[in-house]
Length: 270
Image 1: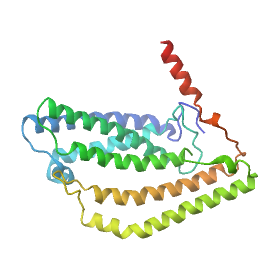
Image 2: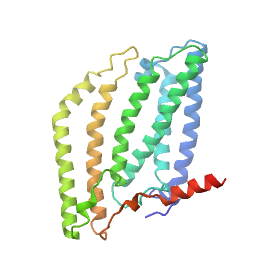
Image 3: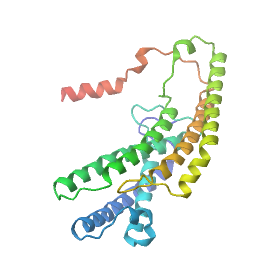
């Protein structure tokens, strides 16, 4: 288990991944600025159609490839460092959830950039977009789902310990097993009931029905089923990782983050 600031799981691959992240991010930013400048000043008309069919426009295809590499490499690299308030990773599936959590973090920053672009485009260049609001909603949907997976990995979902702490350890383990079985039962029923609808939405590439018309239903619905499955796998990972741990007793004082309080104290002094 890595201490704060140490490599969590990449090891020797950490530095190569960092270089890949930097170079691909620079390339993506340069290509994006090129496409934005062309749209604002030269009327190239790069829009949703080009990004949904990138093979038709070479510059868009290259930007999409560079952006995908940048997102994946950044998510992988950032997942290799344990945050100040993060729990230590000791489950077999934790690295997947950590990568997804970093992807959600980047996506949140992307929402801010999208809205910033809309403000500049609307009020500086008087060229408002049709896509900024819907794109932010689209990204936020994935952020919400990925945040749920991260919450499961960090054990930060809602847990009621009033009765649980009174149980002997064997009964606590039994409760944990029952909880995981219920999560898997929910996952099975959700996938069983939603698979056909998700498949149909993808096959007909169902769109939002607006002026920009993004394929939000065709992407969000399958993502719900897939990420819920990841949450269920993470629940098993947590169960295995916590199986032999000593019983913990919880109190309201556990919610106090000493490191965050110390940071606030330092900022006030400065």
